[in-house]
Length: 431
Image (cartoon, rainbow, N blue to C red):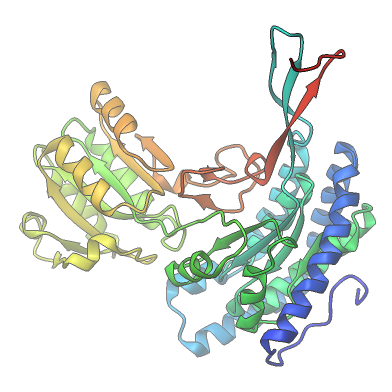
């Protein structure tokens, strides 16, 4: 496998060495992408199924590598949320392999005609999906991103340069090794998916400056990572910010539904970006204390405004920072609001634009919320934990885009394509 995976190094790199490394890997990726873009739908799908099989064949190696990362993380004092993001077990690894197969089963976006038109002069216009090219993915903690990003890029005809976080370094390398083996069996050129062989931060800087070699950068991590990428990048960026997600319990909400959704949204998995961080309760909802009690009894720390603190003596005071915090652990901030307008104002002021939800029986309230909350994902009567590409039927995702350009929400195959215009004529000349 040394011919497939560049030799890993822990030695620090100078800016010049990092630039040379990224230049070499990106050129290799660009050459591989030309081959990949010409592969048929069936060829790419079969290669991904071979990659899924390789993940299962190497499950023992991957889990052993993950155990090394978990042990190192515990020694470094990583939070419970970070360790949860990092941890793999047999079920999670099977989920990763199944996601690869799901993407293989999806329709190939490359070559899809977005729309057609014909002008009065007889010229025929079509917009056709094409791969973006070489995509750099910079991510933290989650080893599943290694498989998800590689899979989605290959399916959409792109080459991928992957730079994972140091917390998951051994897991990422083991997953990448298995993927590379399977993809090679399927005829995918080895440069199509490459894991950057160093954790040196200078390599990230070199990726961000590799305009002309890398076509798009996708950062997936915390605020500091995304801020660095947006500040330094000379390459177009598809930004994925944090998930400061709200659930608004409207006055008309069904009691059982509200409690079930709030508990699931916060506590199913606290470390995922779709987890609820702030609960808003309409002042006219008849059992606000019951919802808060459910959270507290489930060992969730609750920090609230003055009205929320009156509901239960266990509620701690919230400060200004709490409304803008992605906890990613069993902590929730709670505010009592005066109806829909106050809820919308709070969300507009504090949401990160990721996922916001309402629980309501009033159909007009639902439509008002869905139409007025400007987030990438807006939900009604469902847990924000569904903010996941797999749950959207997209097979997998490379992340949740919170910007307004190119792609928004779960970024999967279509989000990793662009388009070109094809114009067909019959001899027309312009007067």
